[in-house]
Length: 161
Image (cartoon, rainbow, N blue to C red; front, side, top):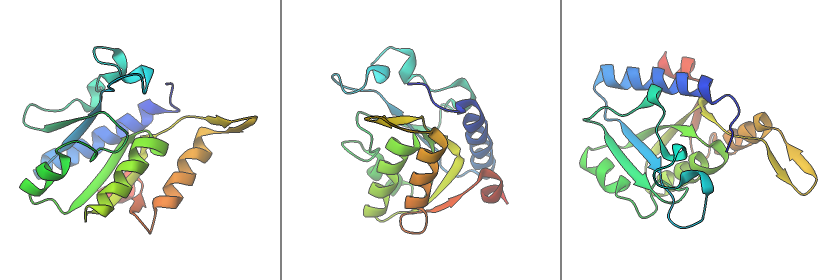
């Protein structure tokens, strides 16, 4: 699934990773590997499941493998976060309209305070019947829906200040 501007978003994720690594904060990566035929681009042993080299986990960082959009669903993410005493999540990644949205909403239901770094997230143009919604509109519709209710939404620059 081709995303809009994933390279720029990955650069912002890399800046965030660098910040958290320098401060010693725990870093959790979530990798989507599908089971069955739910998404053709997340099948095991395909390019679609690879974590981009610019944001690749370090050996000491936790990698959670998920099979659905919500990173908490049938994973040990909540348990791992609790073990490290994490109460606030800084969320970024791909895709704004799917995994970011589903994970942030679930995180709040699990009792976490969330921030979403919106320019470290990407999405794609969507279509329903004859209506085409540009990626930028999709992205900001989801960011606006999350902001204030489920999360505080910020840019990379604002977060790092």
